[in-house]
Length: 211
Image (tube, rainbow, N blue to C red; front, side, top):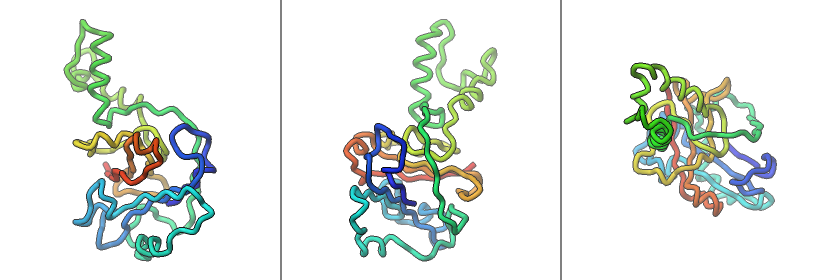
């Protein structure tokens, strides 16, 4: 996937110009969009790659393109041969319950405002008078959909245990009529905020999961 940053709405986190490219392995041999190979690690960029070209006018290094590109697209989350041209608009994004950082922040704020009814964890909202609050919290902070920036969404458990320095969503591709990650899944490319501020895309956490 290629994104021309100059065509995006003005924002405070991405470079104003340049080309971002996202590559993943889509072969039948891998079988899992880059996560099926023994070479896969969510941070090593061996079965996936994010590349940034600050000057769109300069040609891409042919050798690198040849090394990254594989004509075998027998197992791709993109289920169309047509070129996809997503349009992005500015929206607000709030830390969702799917992220590991959410629960301690929520519990801390709850206990600050309701000290007479303290929570130990979000599971406490599923008991007694708070029954179903947990579900409503998840619906309130739903960050699904295609996104650039903000916080990531996961259909399963947050896989960033031990990697919470990857705290800023770079690209999220959700399921739609053209894209399908397994069974109603979502794919995320996540970057440390410090790296993003420097336009350094060498450190990326790539993952996808499905329901």
